[in-house]
Image 1 (tube, rainbow, N blue to C red):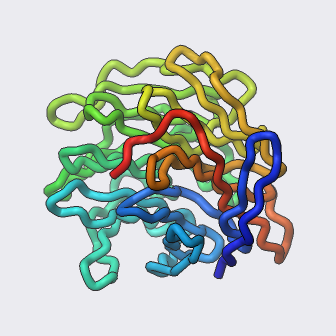
Image 2: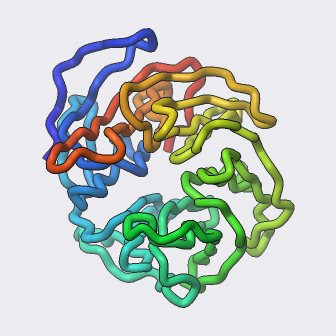
Length: 290
């Protein structure tokens, strides 16, 4: 179980440590006044309140696993059980129920999920089993519609990773870690993806988790670069936050949306040592609170 960290600021960016003792934190989301994150190594879905207290909301026996919510009035949490090749739904009693079977599209582990305002869930698979040492292969994007139907909507992605849907529901942005770029798609009326284009080249970086701010810029986490970077469409770098370990993912939240939460850990992970942390730094441009 991660431990709340005594409030302390450090570094030029006035970063504070919120939690220590994570195995490998990923997929942070700000929702309903709390930060949610997935500890892949511990297989725990964790929530963190404004007081820094961490609670385990669910145990998800999968590696990897990622989360997002269906829009209201449904509002239930979707969980990608990547190792099981399934999309799950968290019920009112906290149990995880089957939502969609992803195995017919790919038998390799699935990764991130992003849900749009109509309830369409976009799930990506990297196309190979990284942890077992398989050679890289092209990844894909699947669409799960609100009725549970599953179909492939994009191919030939170079390690698809973090994803975000623009607030107007018109565009899906995907980080391609092995191509050093952010790729955008226009979301069609039926949920399909069209007009594939490069949203930003980020040469020398391996973009991982991402989040959008209110000005339409993207923050992306970078594990080998040990940083989190804000970029404008077209690739202009607006801010860079340096860390002392790999940055895996990021999310904007807090009461005013101006807290950038970062999950970070040593990579490769030292044997038997939990180096994962949840960090926070205040930024000028907020995210979109929900």
